[in-house]
Length: 444
Image (cartoon, rainbow, N blue to C red):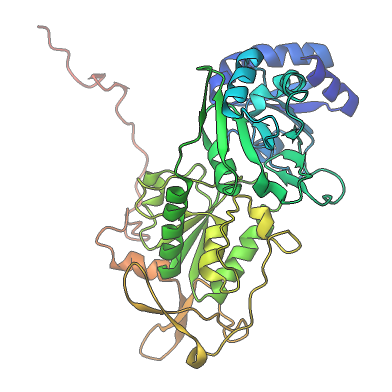
């Protein structure tokens, strides 16, 4: 409470948004009251986040004219675009002694090279754990939490991902290190393991007090993701799902994906549906595959229950950019794909269709072209086409989605504009459903 109050007073903020995850909303009113009493500023509780609760909801905060955001609970630590943010992670209990014992069991060799990662709710105990382990393990590295982009360029050997920062000094780089994660199994650990898949992982669960070498078959998970890449190569219509409005660079990556799909000869639609679920996305039957633009944790969406699969921006790049090759490294942060980033790969020049090398789909077995279209050959928007409108050969611009809608047996409620007669408003029925006022009351 003191750190949050000092943040508000030092910044001179008069309107502050408080963002809580669903499990902490019960404490929101009490926290807001105490903060108003301590700072004199107006506090607004964001009751329902637009997307994932781990991301800062700047859009909802701007609706009330908030000048800053206090984000409570677990966070993905994605950098924000506009508003100042203070993260209050909370402090879950951690048995440091037990964690130390588990670490010694997992790494009996004291010269082991290990990077220690943790969930944000256990970051408060990492200093004590470091004091216990560093005297015994000279090659151990503890990561530090970084909220927002750290100032200055990264030095050689420095890793900056997922709001964590650590320096690897070994000559072989990160591949010579093992990873030890303090926290429960979840999206954060999965994202870490996919990104640093060259490193063996182990973990300590503070709730159960047990440690283990992670048995998640990363290769199997990568095979599933590579299957989705093949699905993206076969797709003709791609839906770009906006999964965040607060992470810095999301507008740039949206434009990047549109251009990538246009060059690949695919049609794209940008969809803002909030938190995606199977029922929402099943409304877009004309879409062959979706790509989700979200934070690093929420982008790995399990789409096994969805009518169409959902891929990440990196997987779409693998499918549509011939210059990008699979190297074994997996990227979950879409900002790494943008121009100037560490993993950006420029699109190669367009190849004439006659000179394009054909490719065979591993799913359908059909031939497909892998060349990129010339950006100057077509001036039409990526989601439109020209068609005859009538016998006079007048041209009309139509949408593939509209054409698909016409072929469906059910197209929704018909408006019938100009066909419904105009009538005066009349008094309707009054009462409740089990006993309207115009219904007689029958005595049993």
